[in-house]
Image 1: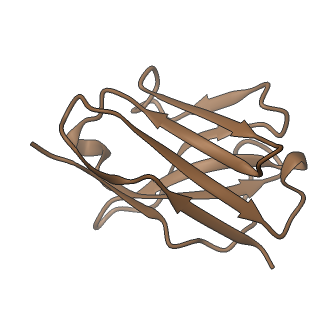
Image 2: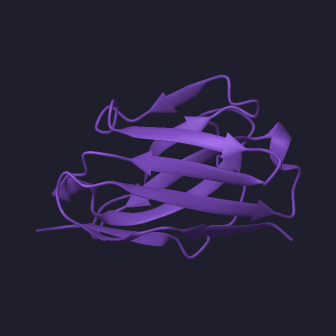
Image 3: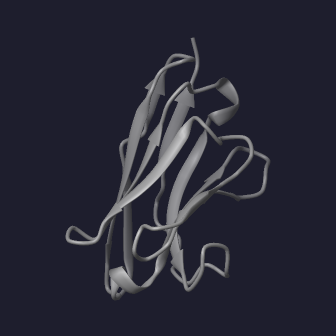
Length: 120
């Protein structure tokens, strides 16, 4: 049974930083690309960042390039999202998921997500 458990969200002031974690189980973690998505109220879920199975290649949404960094630890079945220089528009629920390539269809069921609120 596939499980994706996100954590690390919270309330942060503009310009601050957060590090999100997603622990995966129920599938062979190190052969899949991992992604972070986010969904703000009233908006569609969007892909924020993705990383290949080996960690050798990444991709980011234009809105977060230069501020966010995705990484993974295959020994721990965990993917991370380091978020710096946070802006109010980064406020959303953040979810992880996986797929065969960086941007192919997400294969897992959606977890509970972790809420990020950027506000002064």
